[in-house]
Structure formats: structure tokens, C-alpha cells
Image (cartoon, helix red, strand yellow):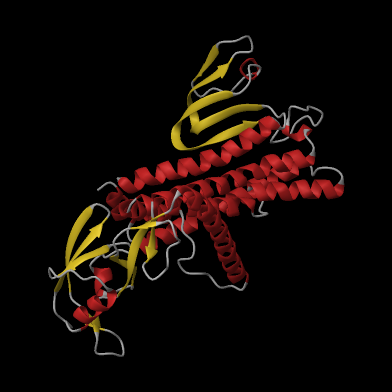
Length: 389
């Protein structure tokens, strides 16, 4: 249940902030916005400020009429709680002489409106990372923390889990904290490695902390490949939670957002170049099911992990939307560039057909990636059931 709630809230936040960027910029450019919705249709109710003062209510999922839009923007609450949307006058074409319409504005203003959603997602990532640094971020103990920060006592945390290892079969997760082994408390990684390395084929009782829960698991170490030393197939590290003062949190939040943006861009470059070479990156892409599963894992680990994960998703959403692919903001920017070079826009019907065709292709791609998520994560029924436990 935690996974699905966290996923819905995070997805809603990312989409709503993105659409808010379009909305604010359109208004600043003098473009009429017929509706700004919280959630996706069908509409439950809407409210707008009357021209002469007072408030006007719009009930139900009916289409907005001229009598509705003459009063300005309808702010609506919708039944599907996944983000939001903005209906911008003329975004699908119309009278190019109407200065209150999207198509009636100069190319540079339309470009600003389109890119504003991406900018807002980057701003959100920066804000989230600043908050994360202020409340405390996990940091390897060997990495020197800046002066002025406050570090918690260090603990031993699982950083990675090898596939099909004893730890993997026992459902050990990255982020789990090792509290004790057979009742013994260890302060360093070498101490654990020495203790476990001598216990080949013996059941060891690990106590982990996962979020706020304590979990005990009996795990049998196996001899590591090419050596006589035993292990359970995990990478571990000595970690501290480091809190940054507000002025350092701002600096490191902005810096980390920039590093994250570069990492995401490089990741997309590797993915796309691999596809052009006919090489698919296995597990390199996650769809809704995979992201929901990861969101649940982050939520169990604590606020610092969840906030950092949300910032990463926000940067990913920004990068995806700016790609020059029809049906995305970047694709519409590409059409604006063509319009600027040609001196006139492409026919509305032609542009609409291209956007709609690519939208269908994107939906098919999402469906294929989602099927890959299900294949990696196990049966869909079991996975979804686990979200509600």
C-alpha cells in the first residue's frame, strides 16, 4: 500500500509542477488558459472568478462553453489523482490573429511556454535536493563531510545485492542496515567480512533495519568464486547521515542537481546510441510498474532516499520532455524551429497527425517497457498485491 500511495503522490507532484510551468508562463505571455486541472478528467467540479466579482462553480465533466471561458480560467478538481493539466487556448491550432491564443503569439513566446514545464521540473529537483541536504543525506564515512555539517554515528549499510546470491534469495535489499549478526554488533566492514568469511555453509542470523522495521533473516554464506572465503553476496559500506546548514544545503543542492542532469543526459545518450547500434540495455529502462516498485523501496528507507529519488525522477521527466520527439514538448519546439526557418507553420492537420502517431508509438513503448518490468519483477498479480501489504 505504501508503494502505490507514494508513487501516486510523487507522479502527481511531478506532472502538476510541469503543467504549472506551462500555465504560469502562458498567463505571463498574455495567452488565455481555459482550465487548470488538479488530477486528470473527468472533472468533479471547477471554480472560477467572475468578471464582475464573486465565484462561479462548474460541475461535472461537461465541455466548457463560451459562457464558461469568458470569466477566465476554470480551476478544476478531477477524479483521476495523477498530476494535472492545463488547457491553453489555441494550443491545437486556431486563429493566428487572436493575440490571446497560443498560435497568435510570437514564436519566441510559444517556445518559452513549451520549455517552462521542463524548467519547473529542474527547479523542483533543486528544491528537493536542498531539502534533502538540510534534513540529512546518507554519505560514505570515508568521504570527508564539509565543515559546518553534522554527522550521525556511522552504521553498516547494504549498498548492493548480487543476483541469485544467498542474500538475494533471502530478500535482502539495498539500503538495509546491518544491526547485528548472530547477536554480535560490528562497527566496520572488515570486521563483518572476517566474521562471515569463516562461516562457510553455516546459517547466520542477520538483523536488519529497513526503514523503521527490524527484520531477522537466517542466511547461509557460500564460498565466493575463486576463493575459500565465504559471503552472502552483498556489497556493504560504512555510512553516516550528514546534515548540512541551510547555506551549504543550497550550494550542494544546486550542484547535485547539475551533476544529476549531466548523469541523466549521459545515460540517455548511452541508451539511444545503444539502440541505434542494435544493442538494448537490459534493465536500463523502467516503466510505471518498475518505478512504482522502486518508489516503494525508497519510501521504506526513509525521507532522504525518497526525496533524492523524486529529484532524480523530476530531472528524468525534464530530459525526456525536451527530447525533439513529436508529442513531447521538445517535439513541439522542433516544429516551432521549422516554422521559424520556413517563415510559416506546417499545416495544422499534418502536425496533428505526426504528434498523434508518435503519441501512439510512445504508448506502445511504455507498454513494452512495462511488460519488461513485470518480467523482471515477477508475476504482476504478486507484485501489485505486495504494494498493498
